Length: 258
Image (cartoon, rainbow, N blue to C red; front, top):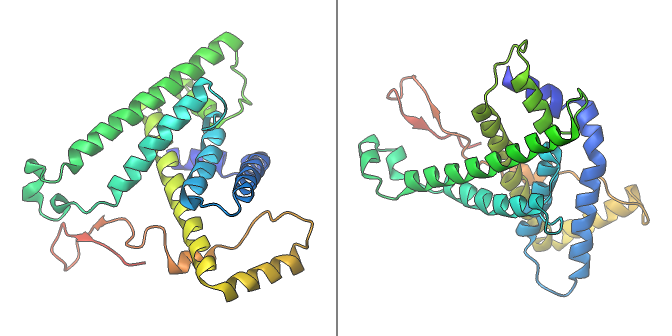
């Protein structure tokens, strides 16, 4: 039910159309920054991560990382650090995943770090929820057409007639999935694309020619194809481990090389 509500609200045409202007603004801001750094080194992955994080947090609760010194910006900067640590930990090999008898020893400290990061996520989302509830109370913002996804989730939680019983823990979990799942993967795909283009001058030239012939000189590119990058560098190359019950020993972790 939660997946259905999420798809209807976040992935519907109305919502996607409403955030197109926001996405365009963030992309142009990043392009402007990169253009201003011509001749200097830039961290492409970091910039892409920041761009995608700003898009997602603005869609969910209306805050970006570098909006001055207000509370939303501070929360965004803190969130960026936690997401980076979290995604690094997700890709870290852990012996306990393969040998269950080692779990109690915590040899690599992965479980302890994960618990610590989960607590930091919880604190950040708790702060965001308190801010929003306070803002809504002060402004009397109880309308059905609230602006972002967080308001939608809070209305759903308080709706006694809802088919989806939602608790604060569910809201925090969904927010974490959206922020973690949507940022690092997108930033990595773009970074791989840029690396391939720079390593292959003939590809770069063909892309430039295609842009000039299709988009033309004075227009702005809105969307660019990523399919070839995703084929060469899937964001999760081994997929997510699944626990299966086939002829393989029951309970084995199976990594599918996509």
